[in-house]
Image 1: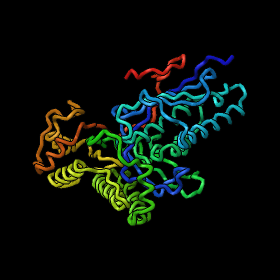
Image 2: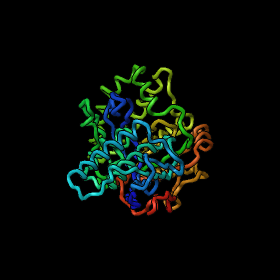
Image 3: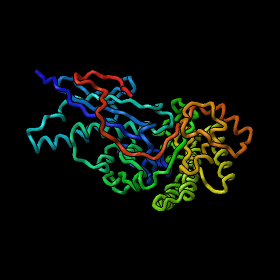
Image 4: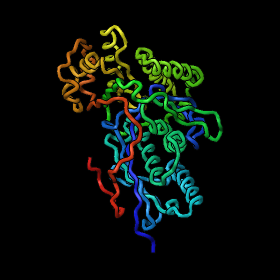
Length: 394
């Protein structure tokens, strides 16, 4: 009779928002990118995925995933690639030490919860696959470094490789055909530039119309601007951005962040047929940031948009009043503001009426967050000791 013992490990993983965007694959099977990218890892106090990986010989045959209380298909190529790589590494440990329990032969039961909307342009797949890989690696007690695990997470979701680190993270595109050098590394720890803040204006929590996976391949196939982006624009932006982070130069950081977002969305618009992830509310957020920077006489805020309409606005803690104070004056009725952070803030920008109306009517909530740390092992389990899925207590 199979042993009833259930083995468990839990981890949280963060969202990351790129300031130099990943868009386009040179190998769809291995999830190899056409360009390098760089992101800021956001605090898990505000945005995180919690995942428990468990296995037991008593589980029914076949691996399973429960995401936000709903069964999720794991038969696809992406999760299967992650399972295969992680099992192979565990099997190698078991072969070297026969006293280890044969976890690699047992069915896996993964239970995962996001504390933010899934597939709504908030990098849910990045946090999700990072937590998925890190939790199984912890369950299997693999000695792999975050960079080694990023090779596996990348095969689940490209940008997930960056969520295996905290702080400021680059995904190096690599050159090897097998993807062995396409991995993430930490450009700087969160503590290097801890004053970095992010205000997310959630313009839509609905699932996006064109998925990132299909959208980027349409761009690769049809956009005339795309080649210029990957051969010239991105390499230059990566160089400037890494220097800006090293020197804590917000003006340079802001310019590259906004220019790169514009470049990315220009290639989407240049795709045939065109792809529009941003909407009128997104464009109003851009105008608001421009007005805030003009009033300050320098760049105190930097917008960026992933494959969705939500605006992520980076700023430094010392410029909270200039950035948050002015946006709060328009969006004070919206949920998500931290009372302690907005108390006493004054506004000094009078936004164009059409901009203010679009933001008031189009932003459903805000998320106030900051640069944060990478995955953290936790004793909070979404699988009970008997293998039954349970809900998060947090």
